[in-house]
Amino acid sequence: MKKILAIDDSEINLELLYRIFKLHYPEYLFLKAISGKEGIELAINEKPEIILLDIIMPEMNGYEVCQYLKKEIATQNIPIIMISALGQNSEERTKGLNVGADAFISKPFSQSELRAQINVALRIKKVEDLLRKRNESLELLIKDQTNKYLESEERFLQISAHALEFYWEVDSKGIFTYVSPAVQKILFIEPHKVIGEMHYLDFFQVNNRKTKKSKIELSFMEKSAFNDYEAEIRLINKQKIWLAVSGFAVFDKNRKFYGFRGVCYDITTRKNAEIALNKNVRQIKSYQKKLKKLNTEITLVEERERRRIAENLHDSLGQTLSLAFIKLSSIADENTKPHVNKIISETSFLLDKAISESRILTYDLSPPILYELGLIPAFKWKLEQISRNNGIKTQLIGENQKIKIKKEFNIFLYRIVSELLTNIIKHANANLITLHINKGKKYYYISVEDDGVGFKKQNSKKASKDGGFGLLSITERLDSIKGQFNIDSEPGKGTKATVLIPLEE
Image (cartoon, rainbow, N blue to C red; front, side, top):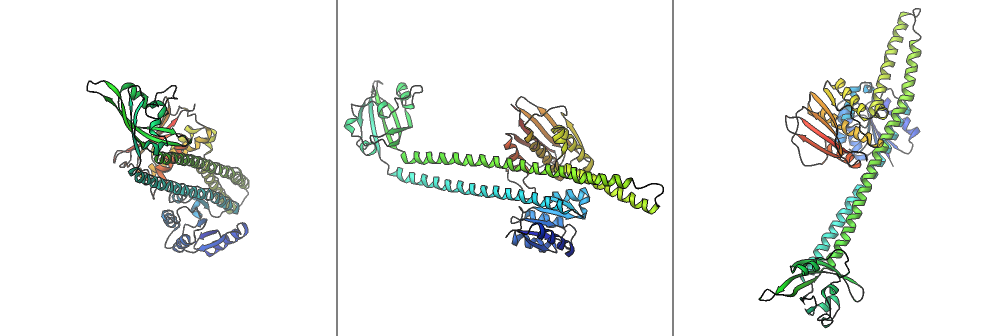
C-alpha cells in the first residue's frame, strides 16, 4: 500500500493533515512522526511516496531533516514539501529549497493549494520512478550484452586455436595453380575444381563490384601484399561463410612477377558475433535516444505544470488577495475609531505583503517575463533579483542580441543559466557576476563568469551528492537541444561557464 509521511511536533497539525488525507487520499496509508529523528527512521523503513515536513521542531529542525533525507540513498528521490509559517519569508523558502525541498507551503494554507502541490509532486515522482526503472533495465541489458559479447570473444579464441585454414597460389593472370586440401572441409569444394579452373575474382566472389575495387583487386594491380581482407563467400548449398584472406606477391630471381600466394581463415563465428553485437549496439543507442527524448518530455511536462500552478496562483490567489486589500482599504475613514483604523492598517499591510509574496512565488515557479518578453529580458530580471537579494553586483553584456531557438527550449536555457547563477551564489563567494551573450556563425555563446574562489577542474561528470545533478544536469538538458557546455576555472581566479546553442536553421 502506498504511504504518505507527515513530520510535525504538533499533534494538532498532524491530526489536521490526517483528516485531509483521509478525505482526499483514502488509498494512501498516513504515517506520522512527532520528531525529526522519528521521521527519518520512518522514511528509511517505510519509503513513503511523499513527505510533508515542518521546519520548527526540537532537537532536529526541518532543514536538517530534509538535508539528511536528500543525502540518504534510500530516501533521496522522495519528494519533500515543507509546511511552515516561516514560508512567508522568502529567505526561509530559499533556504528550504536549497537543502533539497521540492516545494514550500506557508501556514496557514488552503487545502486546495496543498492538494495541488501534492498532486504535482506525486505526478513528477511517478514519471521519475518510471525513468529510473527504464534506466536500470537499460543498464542490465548493456551488462548482459557485454557479457555475451565477451563470451563470444572467448569462444572465438578457443575455436581459432583449432580453426581450419587453407593455402592458395595463383599465377600472374590470377588463375589458381594450387589450393590446399582443407578447402574441401571449409568451402565444400574439391581442390581439382579450383586449380586451373577458377580465377581469384570468381573464387573470392569480388568480381561483381562495378564502382569500387576490392582490396584484393588493388593489391593484384599494384603487386603489393594485403592482410585480413574479409570476404563473404556463398557456398554451393547457398550458405554463407566469412573468410579472412591474406596474400603477398611472388617474384622470381629476376624480380619478375609470377603470381600471389596466401592463406584463408574461416572467421564466420567471429563475424556473426560482430554482426549480432552491432545490432545490439544499435538497439541500445535507440533505447538511449528514446530515454533522452523521454527525459526532455518529462522536463517540458514539469515546466508546463509549474506554469499552470503559477498562473493559478496569479489568477486566483493573487486577484483574491488584491480584491480583499482594496475592499479593506476602502473601510477606513475619518469617522472610524482609531483602534479599528489601526487593525485595518495592519491587516492591509499583511495583505499587501501576501500579495508580494505570492507574486515572488509565481516568478520562482515560472517567470511570466520569459514567456511574454523572451530569454534576454528574463536573464536581466534574474540578474537584478540576484543583485537585490544577495548584494552581488551583476552585469549583462550583449543585451541587444536576439536568441532565436524553439520556444519550448527557451525554458531549458533559462533553467541552465539559473542553475549556474545559483551555483555561484552558493559556492563562489563572488562580488561580481557577468553574463555574456554573443552570436557566432554556428552557435550562440552564453557565458556566466564570476570573480569568486574558483575550483580545480575535474574530468569526472558524475553528479555530486551534495550538489544534486549539478553539471551533469546541465549536460543532460543541453543534449536535448544539441548544445555544448564548457567550464574553465582555477582556484582563486573565478569561474567561466559557457553554453553553446546551435543557431536555429
